[in-house]
Image 1 (cartoon, rainbow, N blue to C red):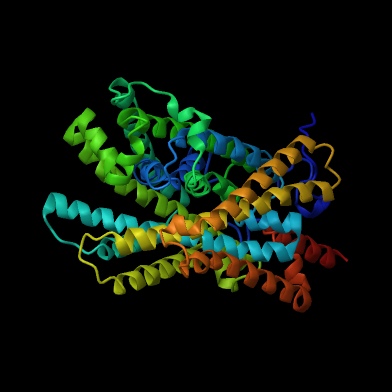
Image 2: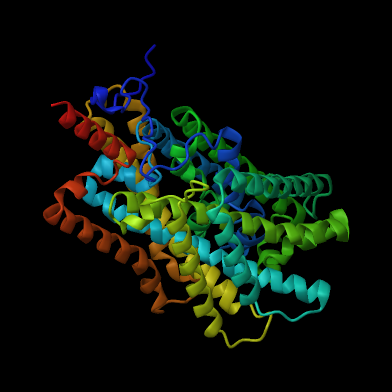
Length: 523
């Protein structure tokens, strides 16, 4: 029975399966990640953990309501959910044909060419690294606050941040299925508590009663809309990581696409209802002022009124563990991108080998731990504020790095949308995949617009004010990564054409090598 999926390979006897749309991973030479570790539940929990739902509800939502003045945030999540569903249509179909731990750059290489793939690989490495390192700042600050509140101990934010770097680094060396269990338990409890708050808010609404005003399109007007788009799309980040684990999943051509749609649908519903519950609890007319005044404290104040002190204390602790889950999730993704790049000689070959005992990409994991430690310590040594001051860990480390990462991911998603179109058209499957390609084109156009808004309003995003050097320096990190990657790709094309041609092929390249060697022996 035809599935509407085009064939990706005509290699026949090489071991690359052309009839099912999937690539059977070659398990050899330490160049492959351990297969069949993850099923649908494990993969779904791993990718959802990156979105740190409680961090979004307590941290991102008050910022969008207060700083940007966008009361229609719930409607924004619905709109972005639709855009990302459109994106997932083509992206998920691509995942059936390309199984590579360097998902974004592999897809871009297969669609837009190996040089574009080299550029995308460096953007992905920088973007996900930045998002992960930024979270160490807010986690350190929150743990410091817990020590101060409950133990009356003054603890500098960078001490728990450094401890977290070490713990995440150790877990990164261990098996991915163990990590999925750790992430899963934290995520389920975290989401359950937010749902309990949602029910409590609806049961005991604020001064304006049970209002649906936040879903009115008029609430999306305002100068902060472009900035809010970047903040809100960052809340979804995680779903697009599913193909990174394709080589480690059972039945990747089915599981990966299923998980992407489940993750986007769940995130859109969870975020829209959660942000609406905040407007109901505080009142749509008061939400902006309350958010601006109280920040992350707003959620905890609203829960204390409705659910008591004990529930709020537990929520504070889960706020920290949720961020830890996100750290672990991003760490795993960065390690796998580094592994994929090492395997294809975009990074030194050592990165393309896995840990013999666990099958984890050990060198990539170590790289991310070292980078995290260096950046956290750099912000720590330049922080001369008093203990408990959020400037360095939250307003600088978390905000700057988080928004650099979000911009990088938006650019990658836009490029991947157009790469999907090119991939299927080049293979003569444009007509068979027409509706998927239209969906990808619409998503790509929307994502380009969001990227433009993000760069234009970067001063609002990072709170730097007009004329600040940060307004071009921080987005410049993404541009620099892209340019360096493209130049490196062009150099490889002229000096090492065989390496250049292999960018994005992953294990398929090694299967072809193995088949070629076998053929030479027979002849």
